[in-house]
Image (cartoon, rainbow, N blue to C red; front, side):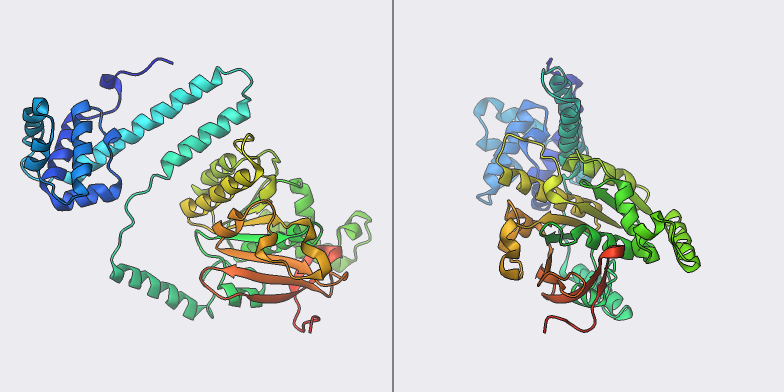
Amino acid sequence: MDTISTSTKPHNSDAEAGLLGCVAKSEDCRMDAMERGIRADWFCDQLHKQICDKIIELDDSGDVDDITVALSMAEEVRSKVFEVFDRVETTGKFKFFLDAVEGDWLKRRARDVCHGVIAKSEEQGLSAIDLIDQAGHDFSQLALNEQSKLVTGGEVMESTWKNLEARMRTDGIDGVTSGINKLDKLTYGWHQSDLILVAARTSVGKTAFSVELALAALKAKKTVQYFSLEMQNESVMERMLASVSGVPIRVMVDKVMTEGQELAVSEAKSFFRNSNLYMEDDGNMTVATIRAKARKLARKGLDMIVIDYAQLIRPEDSRVSREQQVSTISKGIKNIAKELKIPVIMLAQLKRDADEFNREPKLSDLRESGSLEQDADLVLMLWRKGDNPEKETMLSVSKQRQGRTGKVDLCFKPSIQKFTERIESSLN
């Protein structure tokens, strides 16, 4: 691949010199630039790179000013360093210089990604899907280059108090509702940037439970994106229709619905036609493709994502260990929640022995990676005590960063794949 000369790369030599002059002459400017993440490769000019490195080096000792920096440089470039600093007399345009230099650096990184994609496209044995996923991942890393988040304690207090006032007005529920009263009282609803992990063994009903969570959000007029990596959209929609209408799919198929059931199904169909539900059932998705699809929808408005399930997300690097793959997937999904500032509900499998002796699952039962537990803000364990799902299905809030843990006793109706809260516990 041909390299691009410095003269054709996005850069502004005057802005680079201006930024260095401000940083060398003002401690406030230097602290702001350091907080933003200033580094030598922000600069194209080789001398500017050397000056930046020297400022960062001297900053560790706390002894930085334009004269000290210049005198610390090699004698043969010292006069040129003074010339760079003399190009600015005040720090009035510091913000302009900082944004311009960082912006050009990001453009150069974007160009590098593009040239990398071009080079990889010529490699033998690399599939088109892998190429696109890698490009999506690389561009996502650029997008996650975050600006300073430093705020005052007073600002944090004001935003915190607004959240508390919202809870006061809604009986404590200030997030997206789960539709299950006791669970909402434990969690206050699903909140922005949270990763909620719903874990269960096979055939316990985690997909049906995720459907209930999606439906509760839709009934609250939220926009939901549902990624089904295991089942086709139509199979998931069958469960949704049965849950909303209360009519078993078997009854619909056999054409034995009563007049009341036909009306209920008609109303359920109308509900979905008017709801903001978007479904994806490509079983070959990576974190990068999920992120791209979510971002596209987020431009129009997106309140919650549901992913069924974590271990079916295709790893971007199949050469690393399975534990590393799941760890990367977990962190990637958490980053989506943070970037889009919405709750993401992700299902996960438990280890095969998690149902041994009908015991309550533990966090250590999460399959293949402890990162799932670490990255999740909430961990919900769906399990059964005994063989009767209609009487003894339990949901344990096993981890919650900002709240309590506890148990919710559920009732599952297999005929309509519906979970409801059991008022009187059958486990006492």
